[in-house]
Length: 150
Ligand SMILES: Cc1cc2nc3c(=O)[nH]c(=O)nc-3n(C[C@H](O)[C@H](O)[C@H](O)COP(=O)(O)O)c2cc1C
Image (cartoon, rainbow, N blue to C red; front, side, top):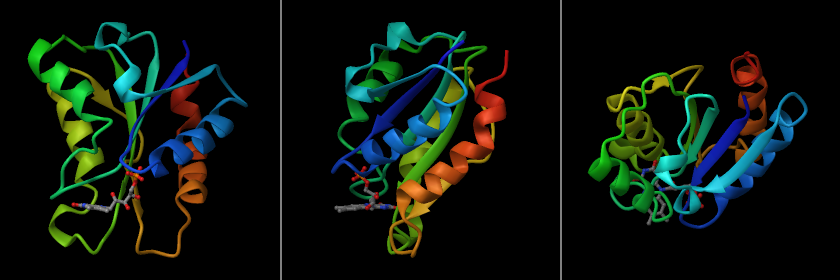
């Protein structure tokens, strides 16, 4: 089993966060990181553990690098039964009603196709004093046991 990190970003924060999470997880297991735009949905494999790191844009929508991946999933509706994933979302509390919707949309869409979310759903708030990479590294430490299972 290896860990596949898929990030969705508009301006690069989720990519930086992915690198920080990869650094933590790579001490325990094999890790590959992809922009969602570059990951073929045919390659989704229940033998891997997926870490989804995604920001929120527009009015509580997915960022542009996540859109082609999820549009294809909506079209192809593959059966993702047995696939396990964890989510770390990025957002900003100033967008009260749509705070962190991007990561939540990812979790909802993957779960609707049969995949199973595990671990705590991480949420960064850009209005907080927390640095996204620090918060995500702490979160990665919490999901190591899940990601390194088997
Ligand atoms: C135009 C714009 C719209 C945004 N909309 C939301 C939103 O609806 N909900 C939310 O929680 N954050 C929203 N954000 C905040 C971003 O998700 C947050 O700054 C995030 O860290 C950006 O990550 P990225 O650089 O990986 O895209 C928005 C930011 C911008 C600039």
